Structure formats: structure tokens, C-alpha cells
Length: 69
Image 1 (cartoon, rainbow, N blue to C red):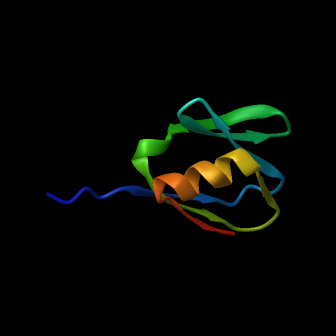
Image 2: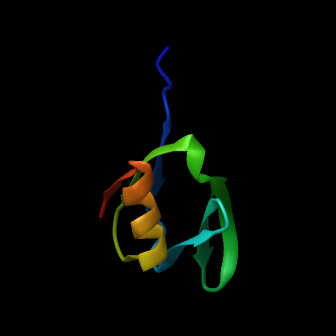
């Protein structure tokens, strides 16, 4: 059986993506805009001025989640 995972596209300028427990959280101007479980993601695409936490980058690498920034 093959599992198809989602791709998250982040295009909001000055967004900050970071790890919160087992989820990816997107904040814009210190306000939570999105929170998504990591096991649903296959890749994350960032277009523009997007910041990512180092912890999130490490976790994506460990879980095989592709990052395109």
C-alpha cells in the first residue's frame, strides 16, 4: 500500500514555521495561522521571505519531509 502525503505551500511574507510537539506551526506577526500534524506532510514549499526554525528543519530531515525554500 502506498500513502500519499500533502504538500504545504507557504506564500505569506514574514511567516515563521516552527515545531510545536508533533506539529508544524505557522505564525505571522506572532499570531498562529496554521497548525498541522507532521505525519500528514510529505513536503513544504516556501515562496518568499519565510523563516524556519532549526528544530523544524532537523525534524523534517529525520522524518523524510522535503523542504524547498
